[in-house]
Image (cartoon, rainbow, N blue to C red; front, top):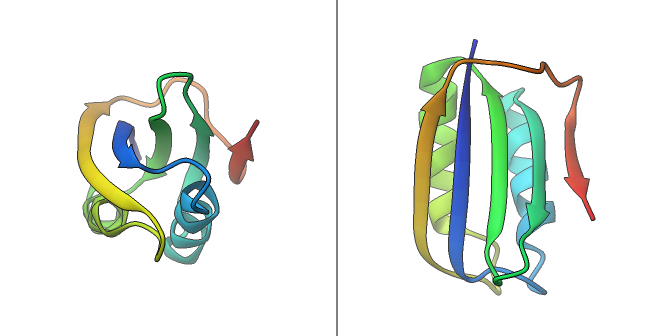
Length: 90
């Protein structure tokens, strides 16, 4: 298992982006979390197999129906803390 740390920029707050990311991750069997950042971006941390994470990154670029994703910065990491599910943090 490996981890990705992503910062998603664009119109991604107030447009159901975090719920979209949570549903996409859960459907792919990934664990982790997503939360809004104070600068208007969204952070997404996900853990799983590399090939599944690559597919998830495509979903992050697509975004929810009302979002407008401008960029997804992805950092690949080894897993530190393991998560039990994919959560939306507030």
